[in-house]
Length: 170
Length: 446
Image 1 (spheres, rainbow over the protein chains, first blue to last red):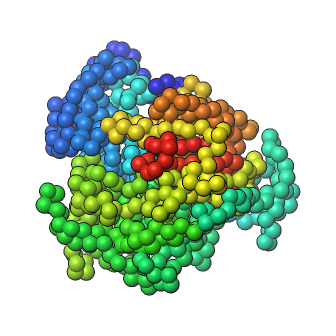
Image 2: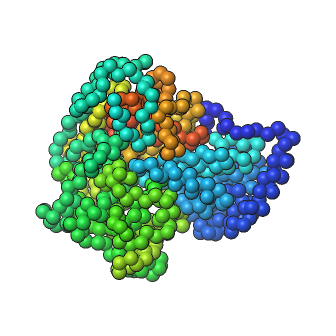
């Protein structure tokens, strides 16, 4: 898909990238407390996500960026959860297309509390919502639902590898 | 003037000069503004088609339960709910929210308490470890959810009847008849919608493209991809509810699909509006497509099929392109009160932007004319021009119906939501997939 403008994201010079990866890797220690991979977690733990969701998993390069691996978890009802892994081996984005409203509290790892708080604030507004976005300092969540087709994307801007366009995450 | 309360707009600085104030009971206000045509703000209505397969739609301030809820662009219909088989044990509910983005009738338990509607008992299912019990549902929206028991009712809309239809009774009792499962509180983002004020309506009438609100996943009780929808609850008060498999015949159904006739879809007909909107709009909800002389698919109508493949990431979506931006997860939805999309090139910065919703409004300094192309699952395209007017300008008026109101979604969002503004000045057809209809499939036409 094409978009009119690049994502607003701080771009690090090339020389800083390895540092960024080191920093990202150090954050890992916080994330490994979770029983499964999810946003901010390490790629090898995605297998646990797949098992928890009773899905099958395939790994493919992202269409728009060979440095990004997409772990596609396919469920029996056709639902998909797609976890995006950068060169540092960290899950920096999670996308979904599911028959039921997804359990983001289990897919967002250490970001789950940030999401829960922001969503609860938004949910206080009256009326039925079929689309919403949360754009915080280090968590962006898009979610929409048409009937029983739930779609969305969550990512942590600080974890997005240099050179990756959010537009290209499908 | 007193600014009307609006659920996602505060009363901002005046962007328009109000030549006459909107006091008293007058529904007319003189308006003049930069780039906007002056004139009076009035009601807008369309009164046809008529017939037993139709009913009135109103877009107004919402249920008048002692106060005005003050929503904008929320379409309502009246629905009568009766004890199955009874012509007299009935309650008529006004201001039921007309939603093509969901399926099924959901009404407040207290509003029909006098009817003592028969509960739906779920059978035990060994494969899914479902115990026999009273059926209940946690129906989530993107934010929030409704919780409550399943019951059967005769549902009358206009001259049509869905007999003994499974509906949801939103539990508004204190404490709830059955304790809300912890998972449902999470699914609701901590905010169960259990009052007319929270719902902005006395119920939800979901008339989207499907016959059931769940389908095969719930028949086998497979909730692996998300929050549990259906529960089986113990018979004693306060007993726990556990995830349940639910046979199709007991799932909450689209009332239209269960009418004996005119059951293959619906048409929403709303009037065209002036740029500054209308203080109230009314139109028609028509049942059936091609089943009567008043519901024929217009020869000029373009049929757009949403993606019918459940294994596709764009299942039930259309694609929208505006300029250089493509939104693959787009949908036409009477249940969204504006056009919602991300366009970094458009001015946001509204005075009246929301403090609570996380999604504000667009406020272009001049009236913008845009051109969109919708592309369906069969590569059919339709050109859709649309107009954007600053939300600040619109919310300065006493209007409640706007065809040019747009809300923001965060950058890179893949959805373009064709909410109620899309419906004004059109007849928008919504098929029901699997019903007798040619061409069959999940589609919109307009």
